[in-house]
Length: 232
Image (cartoon, rainbow, N blue to C red; front, side):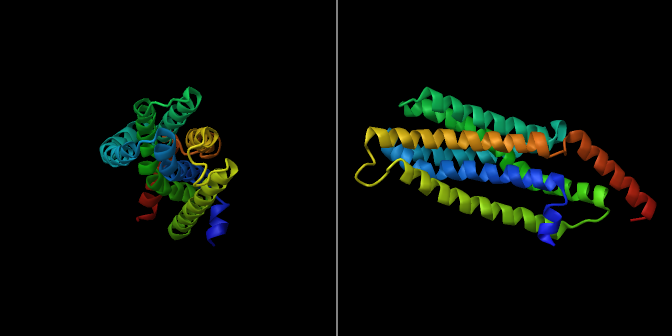
């Protein structure tokens, strides 16, 4: 039933693909940080700062994102956030900076941008459920939540395997971890992989996920009128 529902909703397919690419991105960043700061920047304290800034930014954005979503739409603000994050890491990749303070500036932009998706994704599930009811005449809350949760687990597993594969591809080892070619590879993976996967997540929203602010409003209005007529 879960897979049947998963492939019967364009909105759910778009949300799942976007979430998969998003998870690949943020988990790649998390995994690669353990190599980027000690090996490339040779600054472990910076890694601690980045971890703290992530928590602070998430808490601050949790007070802002719902208001922005209500005004501009969940899809719209999420696309903005993902685009900001992708651009920040693309700039970091092309800049090839060895200055950790400069790099952290791009990291903070990345964290601000990804906070949008982290906060809105679960709220979008409700919009997907409503859209399925409008188009198919039924509500499958459990199946949709199950499909979304399953896709997140797939993304987490894929991210873990991909990071290890890419480290092997650049010949990373205990003996070579400070070699210039290896540290350059670590930097490139740490910036380019998140940027590319976030671009793909953004495209999933723009091309596949149809629930912009107006569509969500139209669905909510239709369902409200439907329930009034049925006396629910």
